[in-house]
Length: 248
Ligand code: FPP
Image 1 (cartoon, helix red, strand yellow):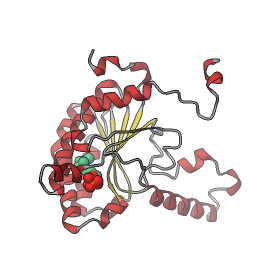
Image 2 (tube, helix red, strand yellow):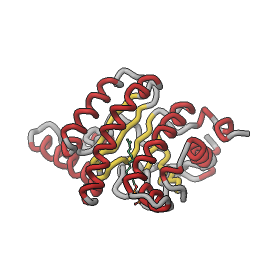
Image 3 (cartoon, protein in one colour):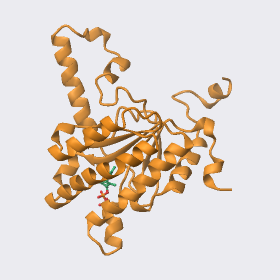
């Protein structure tokens, strides 16, 4: 039986977050430079977005460029930015065909103007789509996001718009980049690394983590299905006991 047919459509995570890792190592294994790995990684992005849409995932967030990635060699940063622009431009018609809505989170104003412009255009052109929402985390890090949120809350408190005593979880969520996006139930990281690298620290509080040794350019549709099936076999307790859950 194929993997996709084994997936219980009633229990598909509505939001999957992915740390796409291993492009550089993949390229090195082929005797190529790191940038070749990023180009190949775009094929996995295409595959995984299609697969997620087909099984009814509502949101997929891809960690495409972290705040820390700005510290990579200039030629790699420039190549990644160029790749983002060319991919976003080239893929927008396909996103529309597949009813995918594009969104982005992160310090977007730090992106090169051409990249930001393409991104905004694509976000606008796909904004009416009602299928999967593809969220690109760009120039994103969780600590940056939390610092920005704390600054905004402090400013609102100072201006009398927020009562410090009234601050709640829900309230804080309104100050995060993900305010209109439900928390991921599943986080996948490729390439055998077992870290979350400053990615969605608040939002992943109750997510199930799935790690695979596959390098990102080798991660394709069936790998996503395998991760979803693995997720569906887990018991999500949210701090309760197993017995409490079965009594429901
Ligand atoms: C991590 O691999 C990957 C990245 C930092 C970039 C991810 C970008 C893409 C897959 C291409 C563009 C994506 C979109 C959404 C258009 P690494 O370079 O850290 O690999 P390594 O750990 O083997 O060095």
